[in-house]
Length: 103
Figure 1: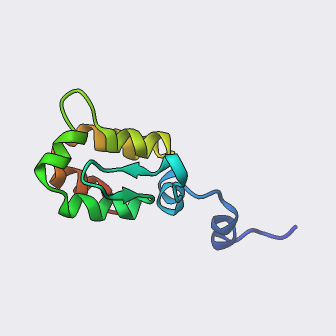
Figure 2 (figure 1 turned 180 degrees about the vertical axis):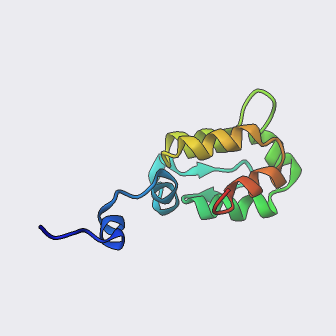
């Protein structure tokens, strides 16, 4: 019986949710329409937007009552774990830190 190497097993393994979320591209009405007119389709877009979004637009989407970015990551990109981290992050800086790989 042939042994499976760790590399071969990893190649056959399903991608982790975070990897799937990073690769997923939202289309149509599933895209995220930022109040400043920008449109996000991928997790990379969210990271870039958080790096440059003004306070008014950020506050429109994130408050004590809601976090539209976290909701989009959960519902559209399918990453519940990352969405949970984003929900706990009350600032752009903390959200950016949560989006860094390995966090």
